[in-house]
Image (cartoon, rainbow, N blue to C red; front, side):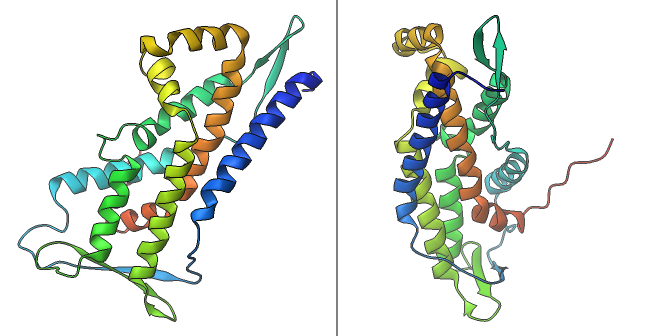
Length: 231
Protein backbone atom coordinates (compact mmCIF):
# COMPACT_ATOMS: atom_id res chain seq x y z
CA UNK A 1 0.00 0.00 0.00
CA UNK A 2 1.03 3.63 -0.33
CA UNK A 3 2.86 5.13 2.63
CA UNK A 4 3.62 8.74 3.53
CA UNK A 5 6.53 10.38 1.73
CA UNK A 6 8.69 10.51 4.85
CA UNK A 7 8.38 6.73 5.35
CA UNK A 8 9.20 6.07 1.70
CA UNK A 9 12.23 8.33 1.99
CA UNK A 10 13.45 6.42 5.05
CA UNK A 11 13.16 3.11 3.22
CA UNK A 12 14.92 4.69 0.24
CA UNK A 13 17.82 5.46 2.58
CA UNK A 14 17.76 1.86 3.80
CA UNK A 15 18.06 0.67 0.21
CA UNK A 16 20.88 3.13 -0.45
CA UNK A 17 22.74 1.90 2.64
CA UNK A 18 22.34 -1.71 1.52
CA UNK A 19 23.55 -0.90 -2.00
CA UNK A 20 26.58 0.99 -0.67
CA UNK A 21 27.58 -1.83 1.70
CA UNK A 22 27.30 -4.31 -1.16
CA UNK A 23 29.24 -2.04 -3.51
CA UNK A 24 32.14 -1.84 -1.07
CA UNK A 25 32.06 -5.57 -0.36
CA UNK A 26 31.87 -6.60 -4.02
CA UNK A 27 35.18 -4.89 -4.73
CA UNK A 28 36.78 -8.11 -3.47
CA UNK A 29 35.45 -9.96 -6.52
CA UNK A 30 38.25 -10.49 -9.03
CA UNK A 31 37.98 -14.12 -10.15
CA UNK A 32 35.21 -15.87 -12.04
CA UNK A 33 34.88 -19.41 -13.30
CA UNK A 34 32.53 -19.70 -16.26
CA UNK A 35 31.36 -23.03 -17.58
CA UNK A 36 30.67 -26.42 -16.04
CA UNK A 37 32.79 -27.73 -13.18
CA UNK A 38 32.82 -30.94 -11.20
CA UNK A 39 34.43 -32.11 -7.98
CA UNK A 40 36.52 -35.22 -7.36
CA UNK A 41 37.61 -36.52 -3.97
CA UNK A 42 40.65 -38.52 -2.94
CA UNK A 43 41.55 -39.94 0.44
CA UNK A 44 43.77 -42.87 1.37
CA UNK A 45 43.92 -42.20 5.09
CA UNK A 46 42.70 -45.11 7.25
CA UNK A 47 39.38 -43.48 8.12
CA UNK A 48 36.07 -42.41 6.66
CA UNK A 49 35.96 -39.62 4.07
CA UNK A 50 34.78 -37.19 6.75
CA UNK A 51 35.43 -37.19 10.47
CA UNK A 52 32.44 -37.35 12.79
CA UNK A 53 32.72 -33.59 13.35
CA UNK A 54 32.94 -32.88 9.61
CA UNK A 55 29.99 -35.16 8.86
CA UNK A 56 27.81 -33.34 11.38
CA UNK A 57 29.05 -30.00 10.05
CA UNK A 58 28.29 -31.00 6.48
CA UNK A 59 24.78 -32.34 7.15
CA UNK A 60 23.85 -29.34 9.26
CA UNK A 61 25.21 -26.78 6.81
CA UNK A 62 23.50 -28.32 3.79
CA UNK A 63 20.13 -28.72 5.49
CA UNK A 64 20.33 -25.23 7.04
CA UNK A 65 21.29 -23.67 3.70
CA UNK A 66 18.40 -25.40 1.93
CA UNK A 67 15.90 -23.72 4.22
CA UNK A 68 17.55 -20.30 4.61
CA UNK A 69 14.87 -17.71 3.82
CA UNK A 70 15.51 -14.82 1.43
CA UNK A 71 13.87 -11.52 2.35
CA UNK A 72 12.54 -9.80 -0.76
CA UNK A 73 9.78 -7.33 0.06
CA UNK A 74 8.94 -4.73 2.69
CA UNK A 75 5.22 -4.72 3.43
CA UNK A 76 3.43 -1.87 5.22
CA UNK A 77 0.02 -1.69 6.83
CA UNK A 78 -2.00 1.25 8.15
CA UNK A 79 -3.82 1.24 11.49
CA UNK A 80 -5.75 4.28 12.69
CA UNK A 81 -3.55 6.66 10.75
CA UNK A 82 -0.28 5.02 11.84
CA UNK A 83 1.92 2.82 9.69
CA UNK A 84 3.63 -0.43 10.68
CA UNK A 85 5.69 -3.18 9.06
CA UNK A 86 3.22 -5.85 8.02
CA UNK A 87 5.87 -8.58 7.78
CA UNK A 88 7.94 -7.91 10.89
CA UNK A 89 7.54 -11.56 11.93
CA UNK A 90 9.04 -12.63 8.60
CA UNK A 91 11.96 -10.23 9.05
CA UNK A 92 12.65 -11.52 12.57
CA UNK A 93 12.49 -15.10 11.27
CA UNK A 94 14.99 -14.32 8.50
CA UNK A 95 17.45 -12.76 10.93
CA UNK A 96 17.11 -15.58 13.45
CA UNK A 97 17.76 -18.21 10.78
CA UNK A 98 21.06 -16.61 9.78
CA UNK A 99 22.46 -16.25 13.30
CA UNK A 100 24.45 -19.49 13.42
CA UNK A 101 26.02 -18.71 10.05
CA UNK A 102 26.97 -15.06 10.52
CA UNK A 103 27.18 -14.44 14.28
CA UNK A 104 28.06 -17.48 16.39
CA UNK A 105 31.74 -18.15 15.63
CA UNK A 106 31.73 -21.26 17.82
CA UNK A 107 29.07 -22.92 15.67
CA UNK A 108 30.45 -25.45 13.18
CA UNK A 109 28.36 -23.91 10.39
CA UNK A 110 29.55 -20.35 10.96
CA UNK A 111 30.78 -19.07 7.60
CA UNK A 112 34.40 -18.92 8.80
CA UNK A 113 34.28 -22.60 9.78
CA UNK A 114 32.64 -23.53 6.49
CA UNK A 115 35.24 -21.65 4.47
CA UNK A 116 38.10 -23.15 6.50
CA UNK A 117 36.92 -26.67 5.71
CA UNK A 118 36.59 -26.00 1.98
CA UNK A 119 39.92 -24.23 1.71
CA UNK A 120 41.85 -26.91 3.61
CA UNK A 121 40.47 -29.72 1.46
CA UNK A 122 41.02 -27.85 -1.81
CA UNK A 123 44.64 -27.03 -1.00
CA UNK A 124 45.51 -30.37 0.58
CA UNK A 125 47.98 -32.27 -1.59
CA UNK A 126 48.52 -35.19 0.78
CA UNK A 127 45.45 -37.42 0.62
CA UNK A 128 47.24 -39.99 2.78
CA UNK A 129 46.57 -37.67 5.71
CA UNK A 130 43.29 -36.00 4.84
CA UNK A 131 40.61 -35.58 2.20
CA UNK A 132 41.79 -33.84 -0.96
CA UNK A 133 39.26 -32.14 -3.28
CA UNK A 134 39.99 -31.38 -6.93
CA UNK A 135 37.90 -29.05 -9.09
CA UNK A 136 37.71 -29.93 -12.78
CA UNK A 137 36.52 -27.57 -15.50
CA UNK A 138 34.72 -29.05 -18.50
CA UNK A 139 37.22 -27.55 -20.98
CA UNK A 140 40.10 -26.15 -18.92
CA UNK A 141 40.91 -29.12 -16.70
CA UNK A 142 42.11 -28.69 -13.13
CA UNK A 143 41.02 -25.29 -11.75
CA UNK A 144 41.30 -26.16 -8.05
CA UNK A 145 43.48 -23.23 -7.04
CA UNK A 146 41.38 -20.82 -9.08
CA UNK A 147 38.24 -22.16 -7.42
CA UNK A 148 39.84 -21.75 -3.99
CA UNK A 149 40.50 -18.12 -4.94
CA UNK A 150 36.83 -17.69 -5.84
CA UNK A 151 35.84 -18.99 -2.40
CA UNK A 152 38.40 -16.70 -0.75
CA UNK A 153 36.86 -13.70 -2.50
CA UNK A 154 33.32 -14.69 -1.51
CA UNK A 155 34.56 -15.08 2.07
CA UNK A 156 36.06 -11.57 2.01
CA UNK A 157 32.80 -10.15 0.65
CA UNK A 158 30.83 -11.74 3.51
CA UNK A 159 33.32 -10.39 6.06
CA UNK A 160 33.04 -6.91 4.55
CA UNK A 161 29.23 -6.98 4.70
CA UNK A 162 29.23 -8.07 8.33
CA UNK A 163 31.87 -5.46 9.20
CA UNK A 164 29.52 -2.72 7.98
CA UNK A 165 26.49 -4.12 9.81
CA UNK A 166 25.27 -4.27 13.38
CA UNK A 167 24.37 -7.92 13.76
CA UNK A 168 25.95 -7.90 17.24
CA UNK A 169 23.40 -5.32 18.37
CA UNK A 170 20.51 -7.18 16.74
CA UNK A 171 21.36 -10.63 18.11
CA UNK A 172 22.85 -9.75 21.49
CA UNK A 173 20.56 -6.85 22.32
CA UNK A 174 17.25 -7.91 20.83
CA UNK A 175 16.64 -11.25 19.14
CA UNK A 176 18.69 -13.86 20.99
CA UNK A 177 19.93 -12.16 24.15
CA UNK A 178 19.15 -9.10 26.24
CA UNK A 179 22.59 -7.66 26.85
CA UNK A 180 22.04 -4.60 29.07
CA UNK A 181 24.67 -2.65 27.12
CA UNK A 182 22.22 -2.42 24.22
CA UNK A 183 19.06 -1.74 26.23
CA UNK A 184 19.13 2.07 26.12
CA UNK A 185 19.51 2.16 22.33
CA UNK A 186 16.97 -0.61 21.78
CA UNK A 187 14.42 1.16 24.01
CA UNK A 188 14.81 4.41 22.10
CA UNK A 189 14.61 2.75 18.67
CA UNK A 190 11.72 0.53 19.69
CA UNK A 191 9.58 3.43 20.94
CA UNK A 192 10.48 5.68 18.00
CA UNK A 193 9.96 2.91 15.44
CA UNK A 194 13.51 3.28 14.12
CA UNK A 195 14.15 -0.38 14.91
CA UNK A 196 11.89 -1.29 11.97
CA UNK A 197 14.39 0.21 9.54
CA UNK A 198 17.32 -1.47 11.29
CA UNK A 199 15.57 -4.84 11.02
CA UNK A 200 14.66 -4.37 7.35
CA UNK A 201 18.17 -3.28 6.38
CA UNK A 202 19.82 -6.27 8.03
CA UNK A 203 17.31 -8.78 6.68
CA UNK A 204 18.07 -7.56 3.16
CA UNK A 205 21.82 -7.85 3.75
CA UNK A 206 21.59 -11.27 5.42
CA UNK A 207 19.78 -12.63 2.38
CA UNK A 208 22.80 -11.75 0.21
CA UNK A 209 24.96 -14.03 2.34
CA UNK A 210 23.03 -17.08 1.15
CA UNK A 211 23.99 -16.22 -2.43
CA UNK A 212 27.62 -15.67 -1.41
CA UNK A 213 27.82 -19.12 0.22
CA UNK A 214 26.34 -20.94 -2.78
CA UNK A 215 29.71 -22.29 -4.03
CA UNK A 216 30.60 -23.55 -0.56
CA UNK A 217 27.18 -25.19 -0.47
CA UNK A 218 27.71 -26.91 -3.83
CA UNK A 219 31.00 -28.37 -2.64
CA UNK A 220 29.44 -29.65 0.57
CA UNK A 221 26.42 -30.98 -1.28
CA UNK A 222 28.43 -33.51 -3.24
CA UNK A 223 29.81 -34.83 0.04
CA UNK A 224 26.44 -34.95 1.78
CA UNK A 225 23.10 -36.09 0.45
CA UNK A 226 20.56 -35.32 3.16
CA UNK A 227 16.99 -35.49 2.00
CA UNK A 228 13.99 -34.74 4.13
CA UNK A 229 11.93 -37.89 4.53
CA UNK A 230 8.26 -38.05 3.68
CA UNK A 231 5.40 -38.30 6.11
